[in-house]
Image 1 (cartoon, rainbow, N blue to C red):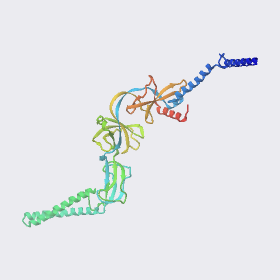
Image 2 (spheres, rainbow, N blue to C red; image 1 turned 180 degrees about the vertical axis):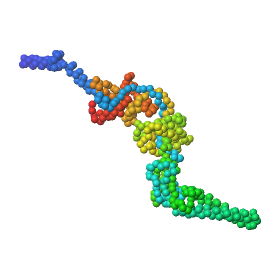
Image 3 (cartoon, rainbow, N blue to C red; image 1 turned 135 degrees about the vertical axis):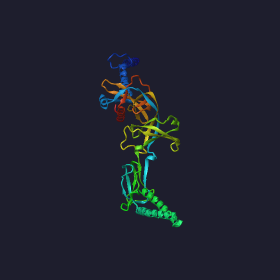
Image 4 (cartoon, rainbow, N blue to C red; image 1 turned 90 degrees about the horizontal axis):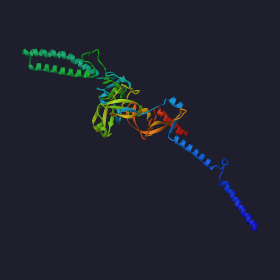
Length: 414
C-alpha cells in the first residue's frame, strides 16, 4: 500500500513537468511556438489597414490618365490686387420714362392691329387703326367753315366801309364783326381737333376725307402687352398696347443701412444671375435714393449695365433677380482663380495635392476655406487650416476632382 501511494506521487510530478516544458519553458527557433514573431505580424496587418483607412478618409485619388484627360492644372496662390466688396441683391429694372402705353385719344372701333406681341417697333410706327364714324362730320364742319369764312370776311369789310362813310348803322358793322370772329374761333378749334386726329387741315379737301385714324408708337421698344383686338370698341384713354425700351434697362441693388456709407456714385459692380454664376456682368453706380425702401428696409441704388461684354440670349429681362458685389477699394491679397474654389453644401473648399505616387496617380485632399474680395477672374481665399510650404493647389479642374471624390464615396470604392 505504501508503495502504491509513492508511485502515484511520482506520476503527478512527471505530468506537471511535461506541462511546464510544453508551455512555460524556453522554445527553440523553429519549434512552432515563437509568440514574439506571431504578435508583430498581426500588429503589422492592423497598422496597414489603419493607415489605408486614414488615407481613404477625405482623400480624392485620380489616375494619371484621368488627370491628363480632364486637363487638371496645379499651382499656388498669387498676389492679386482685389477689391473689398459689399454683397448685395437686386433686380433688373426699366425706369418709367422708358415705358409707354399706346392709348386711344378718341373713341372708335379697332379695324386693324399692326403689331405682334414681343415684336420690336420704332417710334412713330403704326400700332392700330381705328374707325371713327363721326370723323367725317368734323371734317365737313371744318371745310364748310372755311367756305363761310370767305363770305364773312367780305361782309365784315363791306360793313366797315359803310360805317366809315356813315352809310349804315353801327350795329350792322358790329354784327358782321362778331360773326367773323366767331367763325375764326370755330375754325381754330376744328383745326386743333383735326390735328389731334392726325389730319393736316392745310391739305384737307372734299376729295381726301378720312374715315379712320392711326395709333402710333410714342417710343421705340418691344411690345410687351396687347390689350385690344380687331373689333374692340375703344373709349378715350383705353390702353391698346404697352411698349418697353429694354435698351435702357439697368440694375437696382439694395444696400443695408450698415453699408450705405461705403457706397459712392461711380463704383463698379459685378453681378450674375443665380442660374449661371460663372457668367459675370459689370455695371457702374449712377445714383442712389435719398430714403430707405420701406419694404426692403434698405437703400436702393441704381447702376448702368456695361454692354461691351456678353449679353444674355434674349437680352436682359425686366424684373430678373441678380446677385451683385459692389467693389469698395483695391488691396493686395492671396488669391486663386475662381474655378479653383468648389462648394459642398454651404462650405467652400479648395483641392490640394496630398501625395504623388510613382505611377503618376495623385491623391488629393479637400481643404475648407473662406472667400473674400473677388473680381471676374480671381477670388481671395483663406484656408481654415495651415498649409505646408510648397503645397500644390488644383487651379483648373477642381470641380471634376471633387466630383470624382463624390463618386468614390457613393460607390464605396477604395
